[in-house]
Length: 125
Image 1 (cartoon, rainbow, N blue to C red):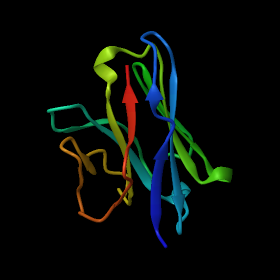
Image 2: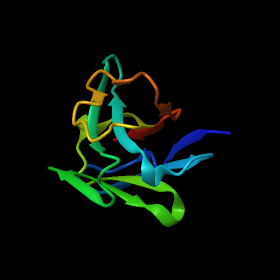
Image 3: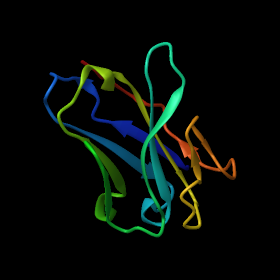
Image 4: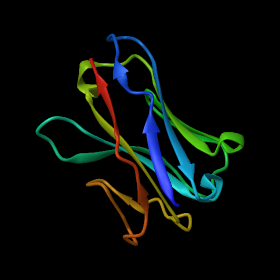
């Protein structure tokens, strides 16, 4: 069964750090692009950071780092210096981007409409 499960959310103090996990079952996440999204209360889903299927390691954007652990079939999202504005439900999605930087759309969709989504994990400050 193909499944994606997020974990690692919870109550966090401002200024702290947080690691969210995206675990896959039924497929090898190392060969997929993975995008992290979040949805704050009363707002639409927005993209946080993604990693291409062409990138086997990690990517950084400001306070956010996305990285892979192939041995665990997981992708992580590390958030440093957490802010109140980071309060949201965080989701991960996995699909095949073919190296395209526009595969994951800002509103929370995949370009080909074929990607696996998890149920989300709540981060609360």
